[in-house]
Image (cartoon, rainbow, N blue to C red; front, side, top):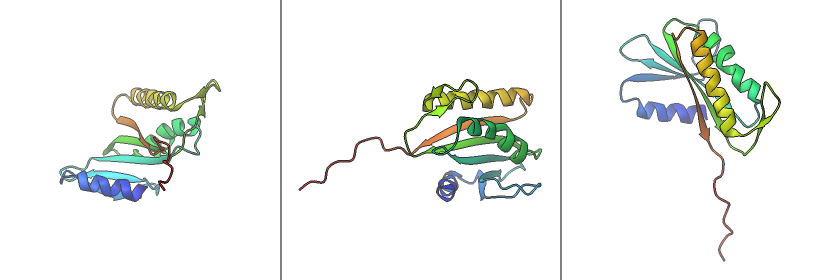
Length: 145
């Protein structure tokens, strides 16, 4: 998945940024994808997570604990994105109240957490949460005779 997303980002770069896959940070942490500006030392980090087997708590905590604290620790890294892929229909347990939540509620929870972390960091970074929905949308047709 990482290679395909990186390939598409390279295709869309139009000379504005370079794409690194599995780049190693100063403290030996590996990010999934880094976009590096060609005109400055600025970079953006994309952390990929498979949503099929992850809890809502794990996804929520990834925003600060992994994306911000580990991968965006460098001064020139002030933009980050948590990109979640989802291949099957499912629900999650809300990390605070235990209520079952659907995909829309999960995305709202994660986007709220991203805003909360931005505010906590004093507005010096920008965070985004995106979903790559790979679920089957239409039933499989019966083979024709």
